[in-house]
Length: 87
Image (cartoon, rainbow, N blue to C red; front, side, top):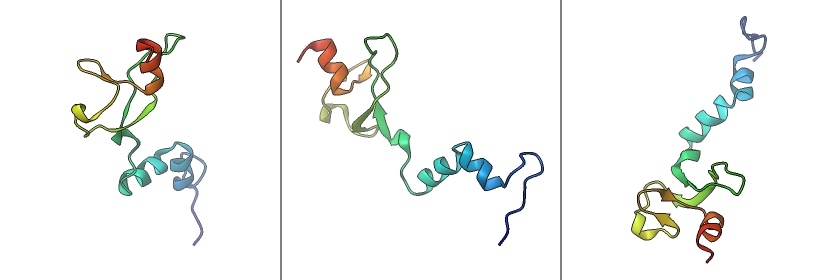
């Protein structure tokens, strides 16, 4: 099967979707590998930027079952926890 060129984007539609990261996002959602299913670190790096590192906890994990969770703030990664609390 030959792929037709999309008139507005100059390539095939699936090439466009892949280049924009849309195809991977759709595949992840269909296969249940949604990257947002894991919580992200709410800490701030030494440079003042949001850490946003993926943590080992799913968003659905209860907070009492987590380590490095700050009630009212959110989940920290272990590195941010060590930097803030020194332990």
